Length: 276
Ligand SMILES: NC(=O)c1ccc[n+]([C@@H]2O[C@H](COP(=O)([O-])OP(=O)(O)OC[C@H]3O[C@@H](n4cnc5c(N)ncnc54)[C@H](OP(=O)(O)O)[C@@H]3O)[C@@H](O)[C@H]2O)c1
Image (cartoon, rainbow, N blue to C red; front, side, top):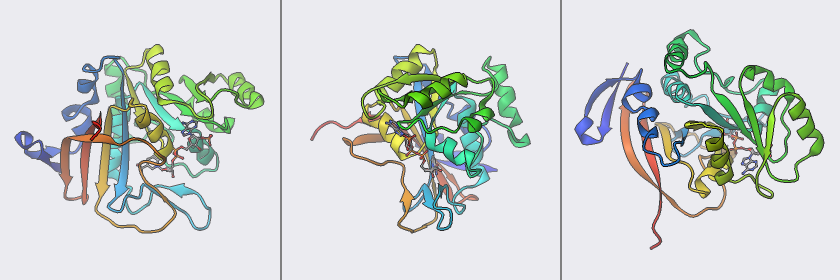
């Protein structure tokens, strides 16, 4: 299983898919460059027409389209998760998990194919699984769904004036609840808290709203984007970003063609656009 490097030109050649994001394009190499010591990165798989999720006509739930989800991309998703001290996700994920329709269990390497990644984490002196930060305004987080996160720190960030009962229930379940901003959690506060907690790498695996929260405050450092060569259509969908914000430039760092998987793996450095 190999992929072809298309950019930068000096790295042109065929490389094994396995290890691409763990070693060749390791987040840990970028990590050291950051002033705050924390690197925040996101990852999506999208169709050519920009769909990351489609609505199921029967259940009404949104999920990653089966046409684009694939194990080659999932290996890279896992390699990025393996390097994370903490995962940033949404309350919506836990609501879906509770209904039995979430994509995964926020694991690193629960399946046999990814056991090497758990072993890698332990070799690096990391805990077996990353901690989890949940962003939510509603605090509608089914406690039963949190049982999958045993032995991991769980932090919920929510705007000021949150629902007291839901907050108390979460705290009683061992969750740390932190308030940030009015109405919406801010990306700046997310970063500040993660730095305070001593994390060095944070992997954003939620959808377009949390993505915007990080981008709008300029705290997202890297975007990993897989584009699958398919067109999906449908009006009810999510893209990688939703909501108003100032433009952000994404500078290409690496680009690999996965011919067998009919997709490209791109990595971008997020930069503020200078005003014209
Ligand atoms: N293809 C891919 O690579 C990919 C990757 C990730 C997700 N997805 C898909 O994208 C779809 C949407 O995912 P998602 O719902 O997790 O994404 P999301 O749009 O990032 O998160 C939505 C929820 O997060 C909370 N939230 C987000 N920003 C907030 C803020 N600034 N302050 C307070 N709360 C905030 C809210 O929770 P409350 O409602 O609790 O207030 C909101 O309902 C799903 O179908 C998922 O499967 C696809």
